[in-house]
Length: 143
Image (tube, rainbow, N blue to C red):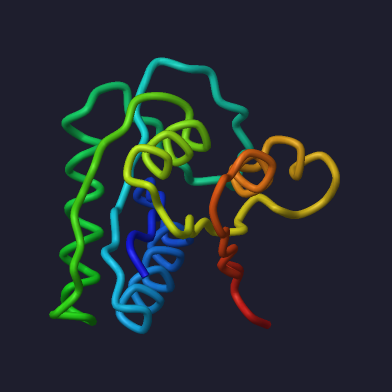
């Protein structure tokens, strides 16, 4: 396999999705691209949602690099790189996936709950437009 793309935003659910993406990358002998979106755009805020919105490339790159450091602690031989991408998170993931000819996009399901949230979820938007495989990681606490 070639390239797996995963999006991160500094939240714990995104870190869980990145960990799952790293596990897949190791198992499939693929390169992992860790992407953090940035830009000046409006986002729907949900009070319990801890998403971070980055307006410039530097903090977005830093979040991606911090995620990589965590992943390398678990998978020291992981072939991984960080990338900040401009635009809304779903658009940024899709653009990076296209630009690197990704085989798979990995996203978390933290917003895929209930009708009102599905319409705005990153996973749903990526699923509608992805031109490669999509893996949605269960990121909610198991009860």
